[in-house]
Image (cartoon, rainbow, N blue to C red; front, top):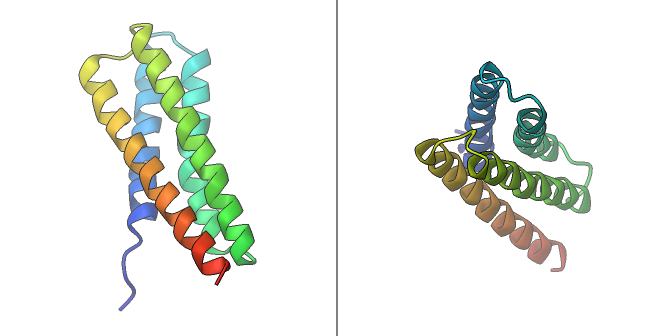
Length: 119
């Protein structure tokens, strides 16, 4: 039986949340920041999926590293939308916690992969 990929599942759920948030933001006529949030927030999961079929361990690490950058940038857009009052406290807290969790998981995965690569 194949084990579940928690990072893959969480990043996919996060992407769904980013799509839903984008729809809400555009209903309120916010188009610029929400588009950045949508692109970055969904890229995290896409890059993690790409990493599943990486050509090598360095390629795997590279894809996860880019996903980490995208997750960090996503958090920037979340903070900006919150501070400019396009997003309420509860919604921000939920997505902020999810993005921090993804960042932590990606950092751990990258570190583990680098350790295995150097053995």
